[in-house]
Structure formats: structure tokens, C-alpha cells
View 1 (cartoon, rainbow, N blue to C red):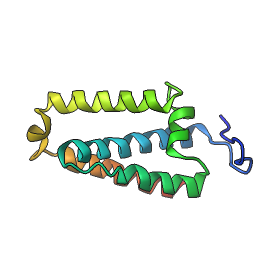
View 2: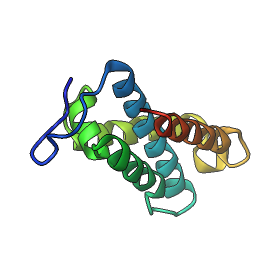
View 3: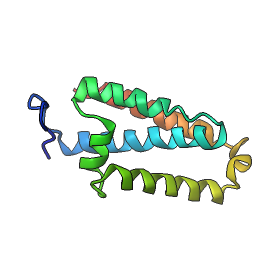
Length: 124
């Protein structure tokens, strides 16, 4: 799929592997931001914003564009609703914020996010 819209004619077409990496990176950033918003009262969306800056500068695409063009829903609002719903279901299954406070989940979310940021940084 080629992602190049108005004003982005210089953007490179994204191969399937790059597309998959961007989707996973958005999912990882969004999950960590949801955890911080729900369980730590930090609604800054810092990780998603950091990812957005990185992919905008390196790939000439935004997080919203990834959600609109590369996720199956083809609509960023529906993507965000699904990701939030799935996160809340997972959190509920693990006993809510209290249940995950002393678990490995926060560290796992952070490790996944850090790994995906490194992977995106390494993209050509």
C-alpha cells in the first residue's frame, strides 16, 4: 500500500513489514498510554505523541494516518475504541488497576513500547 496524500507526495511507499511494525508500534504506545491514563491518572498520551513525532519525521506519516490506513477498521476513531475496549477487558480480567499494580503488566507494556520505538527508529 502506498501512503502519500496531499502534501505528502515525497513519502515512500510502505512495504508490508513496515506497515506491520507501524501498526504494532501504535498498539504498544496506545496500550501503555491507556494503562497510565486508567491506573496512574496520567492522561498525557505521551507515548503516542512520542511515537507520532518519530514516525512523522522518519516515515512522513502520523499515528492517526496509520490508524486510518493500516488498521482493519480504516477509521482512527473505531481503532481507538477497539483498542480501548480490548485493554479494558484485559485489565478487568486481571483484577483492574489494583490487580495489575504489583504484576508484570506495567513492565511488559513498557518493554513492548520501548522495543517498538527501537524498531521504528531502525527502519530505513
